[in-house]
Length: 320
Ligand code: VAH
Image (cartoon, rainbow, N blue to C red):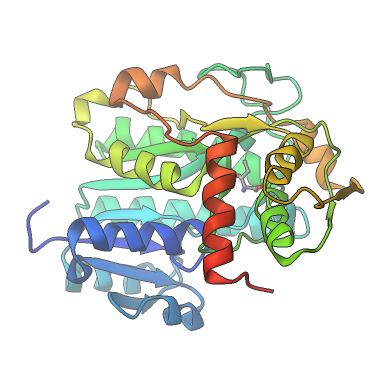
């Protein structure tokens, strides 16, 4: 990208967005990043770069932003996550799928060079092979969130093949970070458990102790997005989302990892409706194609992440 060109992040106020904007500013410079969110109060997180309240359905407003800031890359993160999404399926579909279509159409019209969109391991479901799920396994999603991710992947592929729009996607697993809180996900327990440990409070987990899920520490998640977006176009051989993960663990394994630092910490298990969602997701995914095509290689495993999470949460003090 040229120095006069900028990057727009939609849904920047979310768990991934806050951390992504922070890294993009460090890499490209604060004056080349435009953070946006439908919730104008999220602007408090972005005092060093431009912030624009934006509802992606207002395509004229989006066009004006792209024109005014000379936007050449868009990271479209605005979405409702899996568990919250089940409370209002129609709204979840509209935000997650129709919102993506609005961004793809506008990016195409305004000649945006590259678009990043986070897909999810939630594209898979009970009839998909769930142990070390292959890149091209059946996408048998059973949540509205997952169904919208399957449809979104197909639309991203269509915009690439029909119009040449360079859309790049990652199938993120559960994301874990200490700087921002998730909201409405099925994997959110994996963030909350660390906050409880540091506060000295025992934790009630809404998934059973042996529920294995693929996960990714936030520094690796951000690294993957920037690595994917930087790769030469010809290296990107997978246009639906690339499978990626950093680790795969159960709540019981997370507990043991934390107890190395907090031996008295305890977890009670009280599975709720999110157990059904998790049971239909991969336990781990095969991310070899990401490694082969653009050099994906995670840095953090469970114990390394636990040490980093606890250290930073102790330093910063945990949010209640
Ligand atoms: C969720 N954190 O729980 C998201 C993610 C694979 C899980 O898509 O909905």
